[in-house]
Image (cartoon, rainbow, N blue to C red):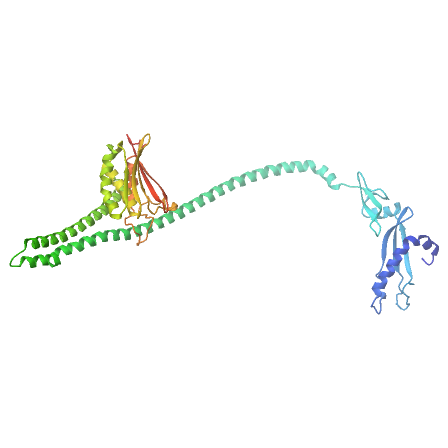
Length: 454
């Protein structure tokens, strides 16, 4: 600008800040440099400014000696200032290489079908816009290709629809196969678990049965040996001593005979009770064997519930008395269709279980009627049955307490056989229980006729 100082003076207001900015940049680049000339050659300030009502682009760069021998004092450097207005000629020069249609500079932003970019000042203010006619090559191409695209789309859509339907059908088949495989796996797993449970239950059953059979047999054999050696027992020896006295005291002789008879009677009673228990276990096993082979039979007839239950209650009262329990019976006469012997067997089993699992309190038998059934409820105040055990207690070989130290004896077949007998009589057995409160088993039998097997 030295050659045109008057032009610079006329524009110093607009160019001066750019010159000051350039010199600040030069000072920053030169700081700490022994030979800053190469770095200064890269410094420049270029910005758009508004001069009057016209927008121009101004560049300011330092004039640096090629050899670097000409030193310049900071603040007096020679500068080159170039200025170019944004006019139609510049717009054409910019737009032609990149094929902008109708390129121009204008202060109004683009509108309608025109596109543009803003020309901004260093502060970010929009000075003017480079605008041009917006081109839509994609739209034009699409218009030309639309018929072909529609045809290809329809054909592709048809093929895609067929593929999708085929995939859906195959997917459905695969899902069905997978679901069936999962069901089969679950069924196999359940069958395996059931088999394992059944196997454990049978092994436990064999252990329990051997224990249950051994107990009465031990008693029977023990008292049989005592009977065989009755002569060696103290009462028999005293009787023998009395019989050898010169003068026999009838009262002493009578007392000695009664001691011997009492000892023998006690042994026979133990043998009898153990034999009855042993017979009960054997009959239970035989009934289960008949049930498994389908040969368990009943012969129902119209009978009075009191005729069926009174002998059972009298028989079981002996057991409750021995255990210190109270046996209550609330029964009114009514008719039902039942096999007397088998129904007594069921009720004996239910009352026997109630007594076995009750240590304090009572066992009660209550008879009620509904429209077509007679309900025999056997309740106790015993230990109760856990909820998860209620569905299993009627399974063969299952016992709610499977330990060898359990307080109640039994093979685990009684409820299974009882339920099958009730079913054969056209009835049912249900149970409700609460741990620590007690249980209630209900035998329901028809009043008049068996249900149609079909």
